[in-house]
Picture 1 (cartoon, rainbow, N blue to C red):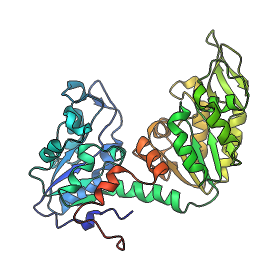
Picture 2 (cartoon, one colour):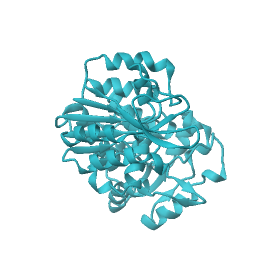
Picture 3 (cartoon, rainbow, N blue to C red):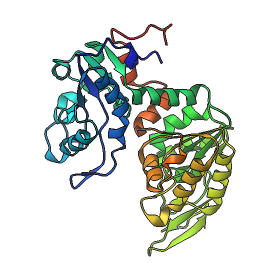
Picture 4 (cartoon, rainbow, N blue to C red):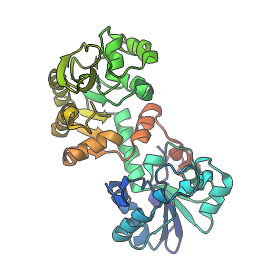
Length: 371
């Protein structure tokens, strides 16, 4: 991708480094629920500190709407970071200033002031053209951190030269959120598996009754076109539905009025799992149902187990899929768990990200015949 690596930086000894990280971690009652994103930055932090750099880390947290908000303070993150990397200074939430999301030049000037080098290790934020992501490389020698570089290597490899058969599993609520990536992947994969809430719009496009299940009526025609594309696209043949009185039953592809499909059923699990078992590469983004509710978690759990147990090179595209893998304790069975849900989808769809493009403009970026 011709993005500068840490080794492309000038000697960091005695230099002050602005390190953009993605510490947008889940916090409840002042406690961090999962510190994966903090730990994921440690290889880059350690590389810089070992070479004598002073590191100022910066991140966003939540959606404070451009002004200070105590519920989005970085204090809990700062406390955890001080345990893992006590020599790193963590700045306050970038989004406490509207200049961050607005990519304000004055805000960028303030960020880079006093810094000699810039490192972007925030893959999960690199699909945003925000000040801390795209601004500093125009002003300072810059590089991708280890996490960002690894994400690009793995996801870029999926797009360029995957082991076949290449199976993509896409779930989640809305077809509109995934339409771009579905179209991009259909030309690259051998099999596309569709689950989650968005599957019901595909079922509607096939002529099935879907009861009160989630439907994006304005996407039915797009789903028909995808189904008629001649590509191998698998959708559920049965499901688990919630009735008007709170009943939970396994149903076929057709769902009666008053009932709502909230998970894939056992027949679908068997079909999808068999496809995964024969894959050379598997990419999974999006749950198969409302897995947060144990009554509708079986489908997502079974698919997660199939992906973790497959001999294929497996990639989980962050977000709810990563949360599901963690919930079911299957992390060790996955080859790569992305730290960016939206970023991984945009990279797969477009093959690039604003944060990567910005790094290529840095004064120390390699020329096209390097790397």
